[in-house]
Each structure stands twice: as C-alpha cells, then as structure tokens.
Length: 570
Ligand code: COA
Image (cartoon, rainbow, N blue to C red; front, side, top):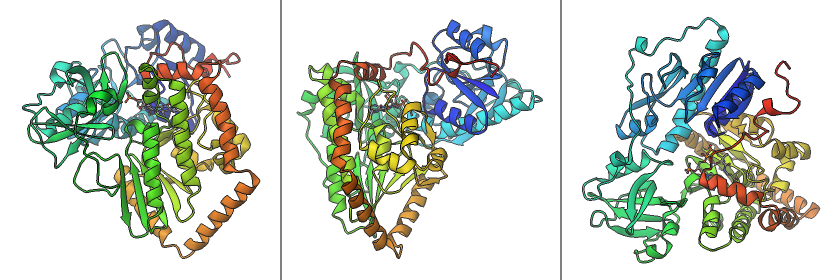
C-alpha cells in the first residue's frame, strides 16, 4: 500500500514507523505538516491509499480527512484527548497508559478507534517514555490499524462504544507544573520535572533568574535548607527539597537554548560547593553520576548517561579518561553501555551553539569537540587487552554510531534506531574514523550509499547489512541482562586469548595498509571546511536544530512524491 506519513518532524517514532512499514512491503513517503495547502499538494501528488500521522501539532485539514482515511497516533488511552496526554499520565501517576490510533475527523482526538495498545507506566521522564513504551505501542497499534485498513472489512468502533477510561484534558499549564521548593518532597519534584522533559520544562528560578528545568535525578544522601542550591557536580546542580535533594542536569534560560545547568550559570555555579564523585565505581546509593563503572569478574562495564546522547568536548575528555582507567583493570571484556535512552548522538550541538552565544567561536568549539570524539574513538579502536562491546539499549545517531562501531562487536536492542550518517546536519562530512570503520564492515559502495541516502536503520536492518553484530529483543532491563550474559560467555570463551591475538594482528595489518592518522587527517580536512569554510550550511543547520525552528519544507530525500521524476501511478 502507498502510505503518506504526515508529521511535524521526522522524529524517532516517524522513523520507526517508516522503517517498519517499508519492511512489510508498503511504500511510504513523508510530508512535514507545514501548511494546509502543502498537505493538500502532497496528497494530490502522492495519491496515497492511507495517511498516517505519527506526530502532529495541528489538525489535518478537512479537505484531506473528509476524502480519505487519516490515522492519528495519539499517545494516550482510548478516550483520552488533549495536547498534554503523557504529561498528565505522569502527573496523575497512572499505572497503565497507552497509545490509540484514531481516525481524523472534525473534533480533535474524537474519531473512531482503529487500534489501541496499553503499557505499564514506568517512573521516567516523558521523553524516555515516548522513545520506549510509546514508540513500541504506537508501532504495534499502527501496524494493526494498517492491516485492518488493508483488509477492507474493519469498521472502527466509536470511542463511546468502547466505554473509555480516558477523558478530555486541557494543556498542562506552567501554573500546575510549578514546584513549591519549601513543601514539595523529592518524589514530587522529580515527577514534575519528568512530566515536562524534554519539552517544555518546568518554569522556575535559579540564582534569581527565570529559567526552565529539565533532567532531574534523585539524591540519597546530601541535604540542605529547602529550595537552596547545595552542591554542583560536573554539569549538574543539586537543590534541596522539603525532604531531601534533587539534581538538575539541564536548564533553559528565557530566550536561550537548553544547556547543562553548570554551563547555563557558569559564573554563578562557581560559588556553589563542588561535590565530586570519589571514583568511577558505581555507588549503589542513588545520586547523579553520568560516567559510572561496574565490574563483574572479567567483565567491566562503562555507563555514560549523557542527556540526549550529546557529548561535549569535556564529556568526551572525561569519558576517555574513564576508558583509559577501565582499560587498566584486570578484565578481558569491556562493555560500553551508553545511556538508557541514547547510546550517543555525537558532538554536543547545544554546547557548540552556546560558544557563539557567549562571544566565543562555534567553529572552534566544533573543532575541539570533534577532536575529542576522535580521541575517544581512537582509544576504543586501539584497545588491545580487552574485547570492547558497544551495547546499544537506546538510539544512536551520526558520530555516535561510529563511536559504537569503534568497538569490536556492536550489539543493539531490537527497538533501537540507528542513523549512521552526518549529512542532515548541513552536509557535515563527519569524522570518528568512519571512513575506516564503515567500509570494512559493509563495503565501500554500501558505505557511500548509507551516507548519501541518510536512512534510519532498524537494529534488524543494521544487522542484515553487517553494520552491527547482534539484534537482541526485549525492553531495556531484559536487554541489559542478556548483554551481561553474553559478555560473561565471551569472557569465558576458551579461545578468548586467540580472539584477542587475532584482533591485535588485524589492527597491525590495517595500520600497515593505511595508518589511522591518515583517515583522521582526511576526515578532519573535510570537517575543517564544514566548520571554517565559505559554506555556512553546518552552522545554519545547527542553529535551526538547537533552536527547534519549524521546518519550512520537507527534505527531498524523505518526500519521494516531490522527486522530479515521481509519478503517482508508478
Ligand atoms: N547535540 C545536542 N542535542 C542533541 C543532539 C546533539 N548531537 N542530538 C539530539 N539532541 C537533542 C535534540 O535537540 C532533542 O532535544 P530536546 O530534549 O530538547 O527535545 C533530543 O536530543 C532528542 O532529539 P530528537 O531529534 O527529538 O530525537 P530523535 O530520536 O527523534 O532523533 C537523531 C535522533 C539522532 C536522528 C536526531 O536527534 C539528530 O539528528 N541529532 C543530531 C545528530 C548530529 O548531527 N550530531 C552531530 C554530528 S556528530
């Protein structure tokens, strides 16, 4: 079937649906919801059998939904209506939530139900629920709805006939999200910030300045007078609540962009007591710790929980230091676990943008950041005493994919999406030794096709083309258990010494053919042009990305119906 995906952006859910539908033999094209006339034009050009809207912020025009079936993905249970579905579900401490696929009609979210799937709620931020439970349920529900549509004999029931538990809820306003630092306990503060993460955040004040708070983490030990900022650690600030304290990782000042808290208030934070962690060892009492190490027998595990998977120069340098330290441990397998939601999304575009906001140079910061990423990748590629394993529980994009590929095997969770390409960021050439790492896995032609086509890859597809080495099912905890078991097996393999020797030999051989420094210099020569050359595309794209500028057209590689040689009857 020909399916048009009408969406506000090509976000991870839309990417997942496109990939899943294509894998089932459907043909998809994407149009961004920019204006009614643009949507009408897209429908006329593509002539889809069905329209699916995974992520919309406005209603579909009547001229479209009155003529053909448009399926809306709503991140709520049957009967739930309104623009803050997940926010309310977290705020109200729902134990079960869901996704409903309904047919667009005049009244928002009120149409008949084509499919619905429920899931158990987890204590997590909204964006994490969206990327995991919601995406999983939405994929299941959309595939079922598409099957039902294709059958031609399914009559979607009205919401009223399903005796729904959900109800109409308004936009969750800042007045209701607000934190009372004198009265709210830590659990309440965490819940309020999580219900607003990654957008819109909770409006508050820090150092007397209005700002929005994101990225909250529990603290088990430290205490202070409620509302007081009592400590800082790397990028986060600790603020006392009525019964404890909560770490705040990210902050957005009015009119600015979302940044690490200690960078947003760089000068002010210096007056707050620094409470560094004693070591990389993972302490079991909950506190904020972005880089943590655990060891189980011969298996070492390095976690790096960086917000949104973005890795600044400093974060890369700290992670490299941790890696160098972990490599000295008496282990034979080293797991690189990334974070629960993202493994890595490459250089930190917001921190780079911030350099230009504070009279610095975004080009210089980009250069420092890509070099720090390269140093980190190099440290992985040249690990001799351990088999390094990249275990991807969450999505990975751009340089993050090649950082993972710098490990020996890459194991990805089935629900993970990979975007192993750079061009979407203003035609960025990319580094992280991708010109060495990618072709040796998939071949030169396939490597260039991946870069050119910029397609998101499901974990299954990444495995099929040889980019990764395993695709493991289940949710994040199930994946982590299986990864630990596989790592233990690998560490106990009778031929492990032979495997390590073979790895060293292969590296020596590759180095003799073409040294790593040559790959790096060639890539960085291109990156230097991206950062400092006459074409500002990268800087423009980054600016729009971090500012979340609304798209004004759909990229041509997504909107196949807008290709010059496209014909609807082909
Ligand atoms: N630097 C800073 N922030 C980043 C980031 C990066 N490299 N990659 C993603 N983010 C942020 C997004 O701005 C968004 O922020 P929010 O919390 O304010 O919503 C959040 O991470 C999630 O990103 P989003 O695009 O909504 O997630 P997605 O799962 O739909 O898409 C990607 C994932 C990787 C395809 C997309 O985020 C992307 O293209 N990122 C940029 C990758 C890149 O070009 N890196 C630089 C070159 S190495």
